Image 1 (cartoon, rainbow, N blue to C red):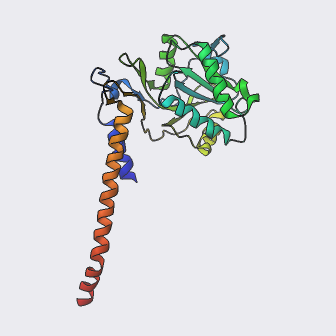
Image 2 (image 1 turned 90 degrees about the vertical axis):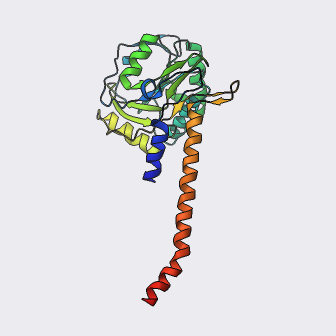
Length: 271
């Protein structure tokens, strides 16, 4: 299992990939998710809420930890998967958003609007199935400067692909302390409820978790016009192929051991 994870890490992180022939994005440099544990998120950063009201991030720094998600609202790939997975896990918690924690989703696309924020919030609040918790959910939009400052602070590095008019970005979420310091990182698209619960408890005590294994999953796309796969699909295909080789190799080794076992036993008896 450890070998498989190591090889998967090499597949995903070791070789920069182009989304297509016209997109020279350096993934190792431009797209990554750093664990800036203990970093203080600037409370004076200005954004626009899903009610079209000006807000500061510090408005959400009260007495509750914060689940921070960076995505963008028209994303056709992983963003929806990340939010759906998060909501599914939060539904398994016995306490509600707004009572024990806040959810803050910030779009990395400065062209997204508060109307889109409102639509997204209503959709995920409906999935959460606890309409009385609306005050615990916040979907924000902002200027390029505010977005970049926030993203750089929490280590969320992304790039814009002008060819497809999409953003290439990592997937995951961040747990902040009530004061707005980064406490725990979750990477990928699965966030087990028990781990979220533990991370929120640590953050609620204004403590910082230890670093976690940084499995990088990038959000890109498939280009149907050129028939080429984006980095996410390409790397998934490579990983799947590698895992297939590992499984077959393990099966062959086990089969050889099973086949040779009677002969080895016989040789031991003769000796």
